[in-house]
Amino acid sequence: MEDLTPASSPLPSGRRLCVTVTTLARQAAVAALSGRVVGASQWIYRNAAVVAAPSNAASPVHIERWATADNSLAAAYVDGRLEVGAWMWPVTPSGIGRRRPIIQPAVSYASLTLLPDRPRAIVDLLGQTPVTRAPE
Image (cartoon, rainbow, N blue to C red; front, side, top):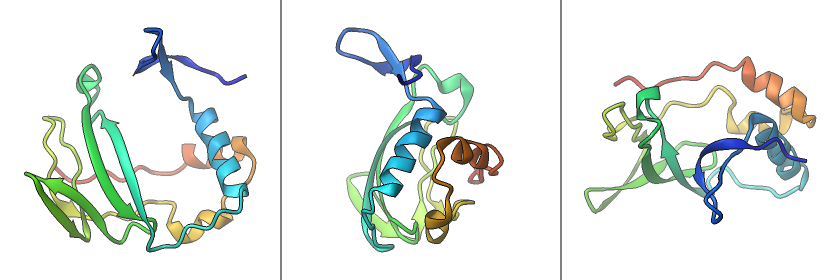
């Protein structure tokens, strides 16, 4: 049984649900073992609620972005206009997205095939991985 705790995503019944790190690690391991190959240049859609600072937890900023799987290009609608390039739009604590050069993650696209297949090992790895923050 999944470890689920109350959080900010409303369920139809009015209850709230949170995905734990363990659940995410299990889902990532299952997806990785499925054998589905995603090319480095394939576009990935992201729809997320961003909490840029703990004080913003009650009112996250909802964003829609696209990026290539290797994170070399990104795209977003900014003021109704589609922008595509080697940049990202991190959300500041004030809730504003600012265009910045893309920062490559600590775990690169090329190294994904080297990730451990055990969820606990992925959790341990991610717990030791530094989180790069975009400058404000």
